[in-house]
Length: 205
Ligand SMILES: N[C@@H](CCC(=O)N[C@@H](CS)C(=O)NCC(=O)O)C(=O)O
Image (cartoon, rainbow, N blue to C red; front, side, top):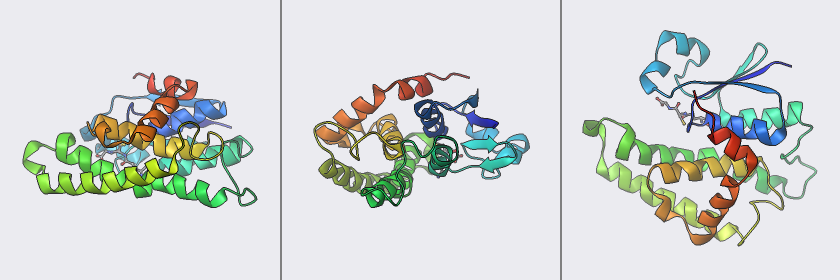
C-alpha cells in the first residue's frame, strides 16, 4: 500500500489527514502552502485538474473529493472503522451526515468565505454573503436540533463527524462562529480536543 496526500493547511485535505490519524493509517502527507494561484498552475493541474485541494493517491489511483477519500480509506484499509455499512441501524443517518457536511453545508460556507474574505473586494457581493449566511443558519439550526449535550452525531465518533466538523471549522474561519448554537459550539470544541484533529491541524508546510 502506498497512500499519499498532498495537504494544504486549513483546506479540505484536512479531512483526509484527520481521518488518516484517526484510522491509524500509514499515510504519507506532503504539506504545501495554500496559494490559490499556484493551484491553477500546470504543475498542480496535472495532479488535480480542478485546481483544488485535496489530491490523494493510492499508488496509481487518484482521488480528489475529500469525503469520498475518507470513506475509501476506512473501507479499503481500516476494515470499515469509523464508517457504517448497510447492516448498521444508523446507516441512513451516517450517509446523510457524511453528505450534509459537504453537499449540504460546503457550498454555503464557500460563499461566505468568498464574499467576505477570499475574493478580491471588487468581486464580493454583499447580497450573496447575506444569502449564504441565511442558508448556513438553517443548516446550523438543523445540526443543533440533532445534537445532544455531549457525544457525537451517531452513537460514537465516526467519519460523519469529520465531514461535518471540518465545515464547522470553516464557519469559524469565516468569522461566523456566532451562528452556531450552544450544543454545536460545544460539539466542535469536543472534536477539536481529539488527538487526530490536533495532529492534522498542526501540520505545517
Ligand atoms: N468537494 C470538494 C471541494 C474542494 C474544494 O473546494 N477545495 C477548496 C479548498 S477547501 C479549494 O481548493 N479551493 C481553491 C479554489 O477553488 O481556487 C472536496 O470536498 O474535496
